Length: 236
Ligand code: URA
Image (cartoon, rainbow, N blue to C red; front, side, top):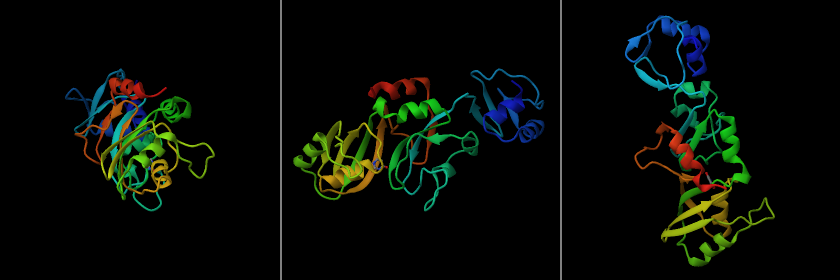
């Protein structure tokens, strides 16, 4: 593939812009500057450099993002800045989107990708991909609340109860809660249904993939093939 086309595909701008980027000696591979935008390269497994930053070449890009509080997941945020302001502009140009959304005040693991099939599969109710949350609550937790969460609570938009897949009381104000669905404000509404209130909410795992302890809020990293396999470990 010609370099200018590759750069455009990877989200670096229009073909014309990518051509001038290469001609201005801002592109290199393995430390060697290439200024011919029409030079052919093999995209598979390629790592290239633009303005000193290294980029792996992906047909479909998937990242793991540690969402901070105070940001909306929407592409057109209304009340707070959007998460995409925290990510390289190339990701927006590639039309990468989050798999589902976390509330503005929720933190934690978010998968962001331009792989439509992956978004569809991870969001499909049939696949029942587990989501694990660390929930800080206002009132001390008791066993009756946890028992009700496990046996199922009614949310006002659905006649069918939703039940937690797993719960663990960490301390009187902290609960680990695993659910299979991704309904609107689901965790907050489940806790409200048992008479409590969510004060803080962090998603710590999706499927079998944990939020890396060393990834700071607002940080991201590429998902490896091994991560993707891990992701599907806790789903049906
Ligand atoms: N449940 C919620 O209530 N909010 C989230 O952001 C995610 C799950």
